[in-house]
Image 1 (cartoon, rainbow, N blue to C red):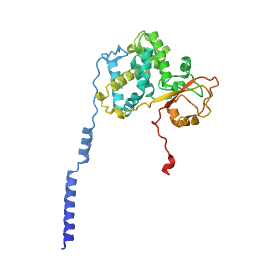
Image 2: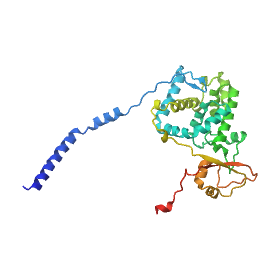
Image 3: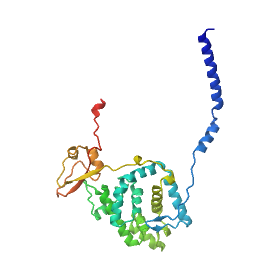
Image 4: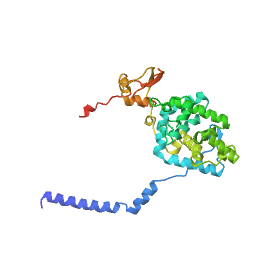
Length: 313
């Protein structure tokens, strides 16, 4: 037998031995299933102490309040992808919202109301509410927002935050409670008043409300707790993982704009980028017959690079 055949034979023996050992070492389906079960754990969450909304204490010692709070903590902790997205967006948008609320005299906790209303996106509800604060058209116009085919300032985060702040302040004056003001943002002032009178109680935590409004404040509280203490609830990220605001400046426009695509090109950006920074501009043009002055936001140079599709051909 030549050396070549000896080597081939030896290799086959090694392969067979390794194969036998691999089969012996391979976990059975049952063992693998047990390992998977042991590797994945879901934990009950300890209830935080001294919970409050806008400085108003949460009566967590009441059995139904405890259960409702526990539900929202569990749902938002274990809906990991959504809550992580909220944490990323908050880094970008909270610095815009916080000073406006502070200037208006509205507690900082209300920034979490925008979180549960829209997920910090320019959402549109089936009822027609729009923007970060989900403002209805009639309410927006009542509080001075321009809403038409050309312009919808419910999509302007700064202006819509000011409207939401004013609405909440009026509700607080009416009810004497920030917690009830938050509930009324969902159910309406009339709806909350009607239930208070009907049930002959004053506080949110004593009211029996519908499913959505009944969960509303607890959802705010849960997001406040988790987003204020992300590591405690298992959310791990680096600062560079969070979304960041692009530095920008504003230009005044007091004439009609016939083509926003060409307008954008004059500032070395495209229409998409113009709309990202100005979602309140609803069409490709601006009529502006009244010559109203608008402030259009434009990104500082160097943050967006145009893509040359021809380079891929």
